[in-house]
Image (cartoon, rainbow, N blue to C red; front, side, top):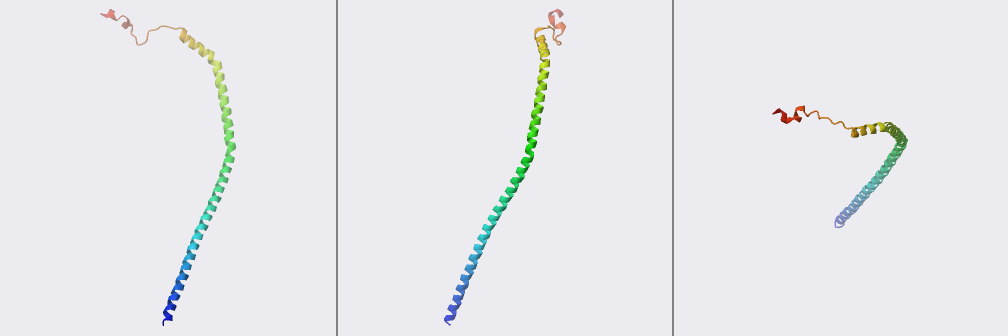
Length: 126
């Protein structure tokens, strides 16, 4: 009977070792799955980034021509308005200068409209 209990203990020890191996393998498997999931996620992120970069470059290229066309149109419109303003200035500058000089040089002294005629000789009413 003495060998029988030690055999039972030995069987239990072997079962415990086997269970420890299984637990260790499960841990390694879980760690490996986490590493694989991280690397897969990194690959998916890089692929997504590449696709979005390509879409942005295509969008930018398609709209770059529009921006330069708009810029050219705005510059052309600005030049036309500047020339028009210069022409109006040249045509009217003599007339405006003459009006300004007339206002400054030709003085017509007049009483202010709020000043009553009776207020000039205020002592006459007494």
